[in-house]
Image (cartoon, rainbow, N blue to C red; front, top):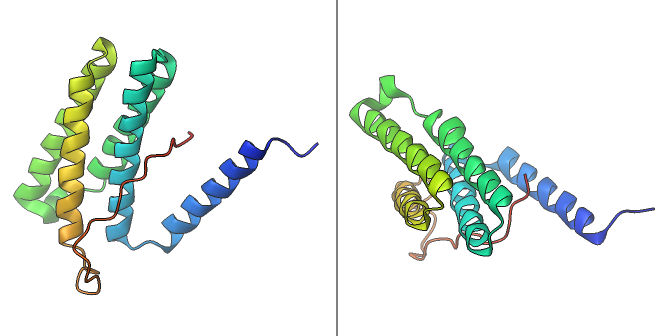
Length: 149
């Protein structure tokens, strides 16, 4: 009659994410994209190790979509100049590595891209306009829960 408890939790979680997106600054939205891709790749690694090939493919596809349609699409190459062009090339490289990782079940390629995303996220957080207000030097933890599509 009312559905399962997990569907309620999922709906509540989705509303929380949507509310976070609506309230986030453009800078925070990029951080959220990094987090989403990192979590999707963590899920892909777990799914690869457990032999859940369809779920692994879905998680890798989600990470590629975040990289291409979120991070890469947000670059303004006209204003960003060489930095934007270099990031565009790096995002293209990441997507290509993830395609290969998916085809070959290559954990090392997924881990490489995950580490690149973590490094970029850390650099992005270091230049945060809100950085002056934040006196803690510890970076925010990366969520580890499974994100449903």
